[in-house]
Length: 184
Length: 392
Image (tube, rainbow over the protein chains, first blue to last red):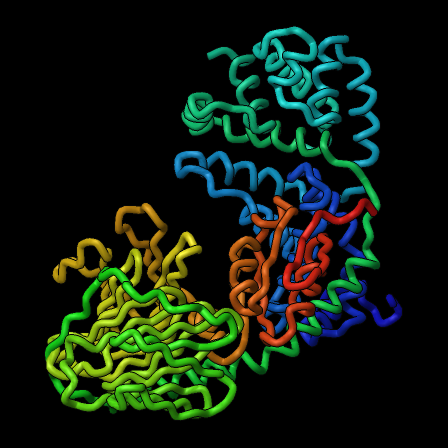
């Protein structure tokens, strides 16, 4: 697939514009997995992620004739389409909270530039740090992030107040963030 | 506000647990100093914690992608065709002129004679209660029993001739188009109404002698209205009241749908609430605008700019959805194909889809939607049941 120089982004974009099946095949090979992981981390739902990524590729194809991409920003372009589709799929936030949402968006887009192979490395550190969290804090964090429980469910399960859950979650996030400092 | 407090709130916000009060606090806080950066970093940290390097069915996704784009390529030509045709209609509309006259259609008058709905037949109920049945697929000319009305159906277009001595305010006709069919009707003033599946239009045999041309619609219809400024054309529906100033537009107001809408193709219309049709209070529409009203919104309309093509494509035998919820698509498929669809896959109902299809093939439509999302369906008799997919 790669023999024709698809690693040359300019050439790839040109072929995408022409609708070359092979070029789209290359695009899938290159970004599908990464993009699915990315949207899954934001949405917390693997199926939603798969659907959105699929729509993003189709959208890129539909707009192929108008495809003019600055040098080396194809990935960003594709990820942005997907992120916008994700936003569309959620209900519109109240106006006054749009600032918060747009800050969130900036934060996610900022990470888009990062080489995801760097993630791997860091994530091992994060896993280790989760193990180092104080016992109850660790429990709360795992129930929330790995088991997907709501705060209220955690408080009921562990017989602690919601406020305690909130404090544990904030504490865990702060400690883990320190381990991720390379990204900030 | 301590540092811990704000971190607690940000964490809650990221985990979608924040209350509106907390969101307000956060909103005020984030506007100050360097706080935006602090906020963004916590969001990023959370993202990285969530991030997992999974493997995905890339090859399968690519095959689905190829299938989808091939279908899209096939319908593309058709889209352009519709655009041109709609434009031609609009030009034709302006030349038609009807004479001024007086008439008021009895609105909300109880329909004493509820006609039998022969499910495959188009029925026309005349003012005297007589019901004439048509097979929409074959031409026919029918004379009423009284001999005063002659109705003819030629190539899917219905027209009607009443003897002129009939009292105008006494000629009320009810035309019903069953599910799975559609039909065009030429009104006495030359206006053409194309009725979509499962729709009913109530109209007078003649507009002569009336100060407005008024018809009632339940369902969906595409109007090409003959221009006559002296005799406004009015379409009444359950929620909306549309006054027309010589124009082409589409109205959708099915009883079962929660939204009524008017889409203007060409010309000018004004919209009001049915229960208070105050003339001065009409909301005017421009071409390529859509006015919609939710049931119980108290006569409030949302007006937005739209691409009209998907709204009028049904008149060309094309079924088109533009970012439409699956639950609405199901209603339309039921009408179009005269079939019952039971959706047991709740989440699917909220998903939105965009696409264009030839109306003939329901299977292909469902299979295409399946290419975007996972569900199973089975057909038994006249009922299709949609279910969540079996675990893969």
